[in-house]
Each structure stands twice: as C-alpha cells, then as structure tokens.
Amino acid sequence: MHGGDGATRIDAPGADREFRVPYLTRVEGEGSLVLRVRDGEVVEARLKIFEAPRYFERLVVGRTPDEVLDIVARICGICPIAYQMSAVHAFEDLFGVVVDPSVRALRRLLYCGEWIQSHALHVYMLHAPDFLGYPSVLAMAADHRAVVEQGLAIKRVGNLLISTLGGRPIHPVSVRVGGFSRAPRRGEMDDLRRQLDTALDQAIATVRMVAGWGPPPLTHPQPLVALRHPDEYPYNDGRIVSTDGLDLAPQAWGDAFEELQVEGTNALHARTHGGEVYLLGPTARIALGADTLHPLAKAELDATGLADEIRVNIHRSIVARAVELLHAVAEARDLIDGYRPPAEPRVAFTPRPGVAAWSTEAPRGLLHHRYEVDEAGHVARAQIVPPTSQNQGAIEADLAAFAPTVLGLPHAQAQARLEQLIRAYDPCISCATHFLDLRIVDERRVAGGPR
Amino acid sequence: MSQLAPPSVRLLVCGNADRGDDGAALSAIAQLLPALPHELLERLEVRRCGHLRVEDLLDVPSGEIAVVVDAAVGITPGHVVVLPLREIVADPTAPTPRSSHELPIDQVLGLARTLRPGGLPEGSFVGIGGRRFGYGRPLSRSVRLNLGAFQAAIAAELSRITRIRVAS
Image (cartoon, each protein chain N blue to C red):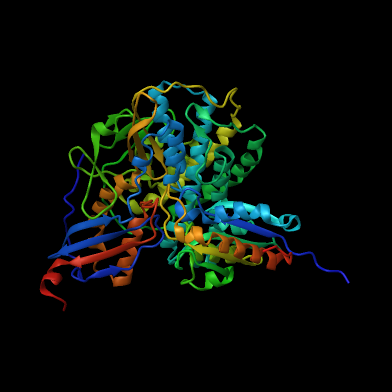
C-alpha cells in the first residue's frame, strides 16, 4: 500500500489566507477539521472528532451474544443493521452455527433495506445540494421538488424493508444468533415487492441524474479496501481485499490493520500495519467488485463511463453510491421473488469460548467486530472498528491533495468546496455529530501575528 | 345545530428509552396513555418515531393534527415547552428536539411544509429540556422531577386540540 505524509505544495494565489468555517452541515456527527498551511504547503489536514467517547466496547462486556446484538444496534440510527450483522456473523462463526439459506437471504434483504435508506438519504438529502448549488435540501426542494420527492420515495422503501424484517424502522430487534426472532410471512412481502418495482425505475433515474452532475476536479488515487465475494456483491460475506493485493479472511482484519489513538480526536484512527491510510465505502466496493453488481446496476455503471474516475475522484462517490442504491433495490426485488419462509426462523446454538470476529459492508464501508467470549458465553473484550474511523486518514489525505485547487478561490467558494469534499465520504461521525468546524491556519501568519 | 367532530391527532413520540433523557417522551407517554379518557384515545394514533423524519410528517393525513413529543436541547433541563410546529420551522433558535438525526429539525419541518399537500400539518411540539443523552443512562434528575409537568403539558395539548376534557 502507499500512503502520504499529508504535505502538499500549494502554488495557488491566496494560499496564506485564513479560513474559518463555523460548522459543516449535512454530515452525521460532531467534529472539526483543521487545515494548517505553512509557506504555501499543507502540513496538516486533520479531522478531529470531539464527540464524547461512547464506550460501547465496554458496555457489551459481560453480555450474552444476543444482548450484544441489541446493544450494538444502538450505535447508529442510520446503519444499525451493519452493526448487528458484523456481530451476529462473528458469533455464529465462533459457535459453528449454520443458518438456513432463506435466513441468509433475509439478512441480505435486510442489509439491502439499510443501504437503500442510507444511500437515498445521502445522495438526495445531504450530497445533492452540493451539486445543484443549494445550501440545503430544503432550499433545493423549492426548485427541485420532484428530485427530493423521488429521494424520499426511495428512502421510504428502505425504511419499509427494515421495519418489515427488523421489527421496527430504527434500531431493529429481530436479528438473533442463529437467525431471526421472527421470519416474515410470504404475504408480508407483496406490498414491498410492488414498491420495489417503482423504486427500481427511480433508482435507475438516480444513477443517470447524478452521473450528469459535474464534480470538482480531483485526481488522487488512494488504496481501496472492501469485502469481495466471487458470486455476489458484498454485504455479509467475502474476503477483505484491496487495490494493493491484500486478501484476508473476514475475521482477519487485525492481520493487516490496526487502530491507533491520535491526539485531538475521540475516534480511533485505523492504518495498515505499515502506517498507511486507506479508503472504504462505495468507491472501494465498486472498484473491487463491480463485476458482481446486479446486472441492472452493472449496466448503468458501464453506461456512465465513470468507473475509472470513481476510483480517483472522491467527489464521484455520489455516482458509486447511486449505483449501489440501484443494486440494493434490484437485489431486494430478486430476493423477495425467491423468498420462502424458513421452517424455523432460528436454529439453536451452544456458546463456546474463543475469539469471534467478522467484517461486513456497512453503507459507509467495512465494519469489523471482534469479541473475546469467555467460558460462560459472555463477552470479555470487544473491538468495534467503524468505517468512518477507518476513513479518517483517507479524508485527511484527500483534503491535503484537494486544498491546493481551492485556496485561490474566493473564501465562500473555497469553503463550500472543502465542505463538499468531506461530505463526499458520507461520514457518520455520530453516530453522533452535529458540528464540524473547519479551520485553515497559516502558521506563517500565526507566527507573525495578524496583518 | 350540529357540531363538527373534534379532529384526530397523530401523536409522534420520539426518542430512545435507552439514551438517558432521550427516553423522556416514551416514559411520559407510557404513563399518560392509560390515564387518558377513552373518547380521547379513540382520536389518537400513536406512532413511535425514534427520530423525527420527513416521512413521519408527510404521512399525516389531511385534517389530522400532529403532536410531536420529544426531549429537547436549547432549553433548561426539565423545562417544558409547547410550540406550534410552524414556529419551530420559522425560528432556528427555537428549542430543538434532541432525537432528530438524519436532518436538522427545521429542515425536516421545512421539507414537510414544501412537499406535503396542504403544507406542514397543523400541530405542535411538546418538549422537555434534556440534560444527558448517553447510552445506558437513566433519566436525569431534572427530567425525572418534571416528568409529571411534561405529561400534564401533553395531556393539556391533546385536550385543547380534541376539546375532550382530561382530568388533571
């Protein structure tokens, strides 16, 4: 893998100006970003997350696996299923649980629901205003009502999938070790199927729409990491692969990566053991697994002609996300068509001590869980590595690469571009945040005092 | 002389019971509902929202009144407020429901006003100022001591809308 030292020469005029953005809107979570410029060079681009530590890894200690599933779902209101899925697969892998194929299909369907609602939220409500030139989706809705309505309509289908399968739309409760607490009846799927038909057309229109939106120019390839499965687009299963040739079992995240505490942020960063940053999420999944997309999604991706640009310009992540939105809708339709309720929604299991670890693909990227289970079947130690914390280094590296292209712009325009770059990652700082403060500090000016 | 039937109310109960004061609305409603008169309960449709989403407001049928109940930030912990929904969307400094997560509350209400046929539903926000929202924490003392006032404010609002008397 290759990394960067975060230093980038700035030749743009106005590079010694000081920027201060009160807060970045349309991201999930609380944090700040500091960009330091010294002698025309970006010497530090740091995303600081100051949301208070939430101690979930400590909260699950002493709990049974099924209790853990309910607790980790509370980490995020947008992607609770991802947390449940990484945990449930980890425990089932350790306990040797083999689930019914229809349970496996239901879990993919549930994950489709989460991707649909999360991607629709980000594409339409959070990211689209950047491309259409509005400060918010509310302002955008005044002129592009049909666009916003389409986004909400798609998102509703995701909500409905989650509530039908998960028991409720937020923090679902049905996922259990060995299966589900309850499997939906065939008839419960009929309304979903009808709505997915409509959503499919809307998702295709989404890809075509966002592919036509011109992004700010950026060519900055980063190492990409995602799950890859030979037969299906990755949700719950696959091997951890990268553009640099990595190939690991989903349990073995720690063989290549590590978390580290970085000063000034409450979220752990992640790096390769060699200290290199890497990028997760739709961009990485498309780059590493486009051949496994649903045929409808693959055809639309090919038609955009943007597969290569997606890899090097994070602003094009909106296209990758839209393609995945289409994939999730199309696959959900297929899964419902093939659905047969399992004879038993849940198989019995016997806990045993050991290390339970697994990785799945949350909407924002690879989510790794690792639990040490004691003789009583309770969690003794836990490690949860969310995608946004892994992406922090890539965000900072992209910011350093992108900043030179905007520092010569008028202040408001440069500010908007920097905010847009951060939003392109769909950071879920919150599962907490409301505030992202951006400061660009010119150290030469600081040393010499104000002018 | 005939009298119009009192309107129905969509009660949108926001929050999470396991996040400290974020569970204030759920606690209040759980205790309040059994005490409400039958004829008022018949007018109520209670929806649990987690966090308030645009879709929750778009789903409110024409002629139905929305009452959003949630813990709030921006006001003194334990303090109870009742505000028309229209005032919140017009005033960015108004108390903010804590549970709104996907979009800021003014955006949620603003989108509902723009996209819903007939605009933002008539209705109100009944909130209680929260102090702590961490996972696994109980209600703060400020909220616990004022939960009765919170329930009374919700009951009064429901009574005002439906014109059905609620015993205090």
